[in-house]
Length: 299
Image (cartoon, rainbow, N blue to C red; front, side, top):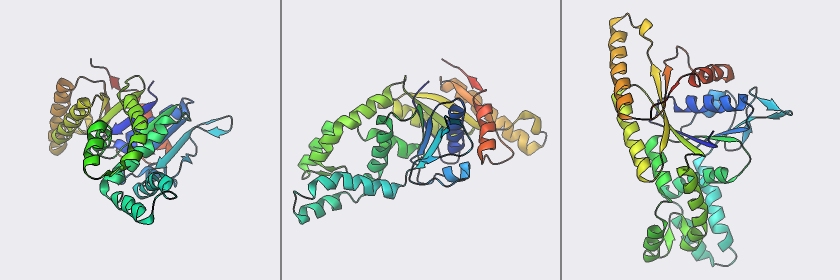
């Protein structure tokens, strides 16, 4: 079993539901589990029907061992993560640098790039900790996730370019960046370790979703990260397709499923379209039972 499980996929494919059900599955098995979202549009709190926010929060009514909860969740707030990251970078310089230099550093750390790095830095902290048996990452829609994972890949080039540009980067001063290099290198090694890390793409049985999954999977492989599984979510059961509209939809879905099986040689899980929204612990337990009973290996 992998210690780190990353869920990714296009927005609206049911990624958060699948990630939440997976976290519940491992907690019920008796494993101390954390689910973390780096998606600014995440609805973990809605799915679990309790307040979560930018703090590690125990999830009620899932699993307990020795009177301690087994499932925890956190919604990484990009603004809070950025604030914490900036202070970690700038803090050590406050007592040794003049105010105008500090102001320059803070200005360099005000771009969108810093927000992305801050979220990435935050979940690296989770990967380096040894507090949980399983950590499930519900990541932002695919393109954003891949940008995060590509960030630490070519450090020497990035450092060299930033030195030419005056010694500043969206990661902070070059000195601080070099100090972070080992941390990011360890994280990248973990991401590439298929014994410890699994990437799961969630898709719908639709052509655009298949295209997005293929593209993202190939992009990850170019940086040495192999996706482990595919979940095809939202499949219409044939028995409900007597009406012509649904019959055509069913046939279209089946065509995409066959194409997916042909072009993606990975284990797959198949999830039927549900007639109700998966919210609350009991509904997520039902999803988990279906999810972990339906896997087809394909080498």
